[in-house]
Image (cartoon, rainbow, N blue to C red; front, side):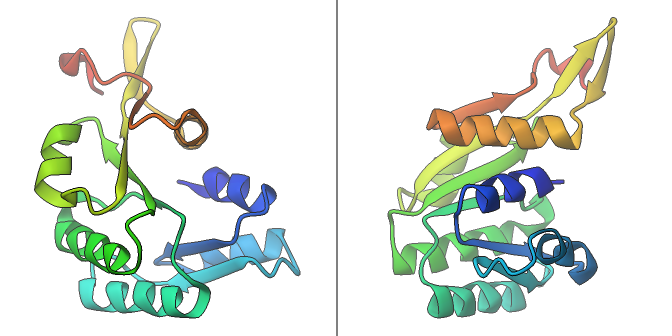
Length: 171
């Protein structure tokens, strides 16, 4: 779902590490950008906390600390999120951490105080929905990606893609 975000950073000459469960989907990036040496693919399920954190830690040791992390870990992986924060903070508190959250997730203040404790430069991106023709729908992958790119470019600490209210209009 974040393919276009990844492409944005690759096309803007960032070194990019991509973590995903499906190696065939990850290979899309090396197929689309053949010969690009700044793409590192990590096939790993973030729900397997121990292996996920080991993969992140190994990547950091090989390539250096991440300047920017764009993280969309679902709530069933809160332990992975906590350990990811800890491993990043262990190396560098200057990492800008974009935390992608669904529209029903907790607020910035709650997340920041409960999870981050000023360990990283925390930025929250809340994904909402769109109301069109008197009905609502979830955001498309392109809308999500464009919103995340806009959030990155805006440098705001809190950014909403689409709308998150009124909550009774959520699809």
